[in-house]
Length: 170
Image (cartoon, rainbow, N blue to C red):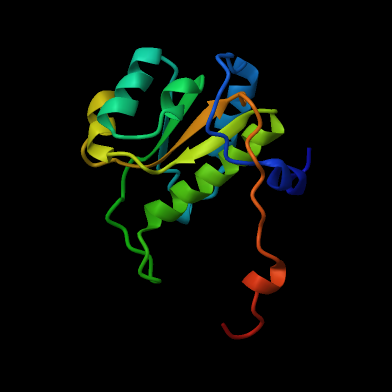
């Protein structure tokens, strides 16, 4: 599958079958995280793989997040490991950009592997950090639930290019 096909095929899935993700497919998704570009090539990423049902339930409950966190076979927690105080010249925290890129690369790799995913950004970071022993200086930016869709999530319509693209000025 090429990148454009993966982008067109990918959708947010919120209901999962109790089916295990194959190790080879998971390895490809993790390889996408490893290959993600980062500012200054810092590679300040740590991905925590959570498969333990009890841990996923605890994250779901204590971190005040969605039920899909405990339903999907795999929960990937994306952490920025250091330099979280670095602000880019444009005024944005660099680690947020790095983690957003990693999240996107991983979502596309998962789609290529025939896996379904959903980004999880609605969670209490402090609770997840405590459950997973994430050091204070690290930041959790996003989580990805990954597995196999139960049912059929709808594809959401995307805006047209003319609605999102401007030439030369806003």
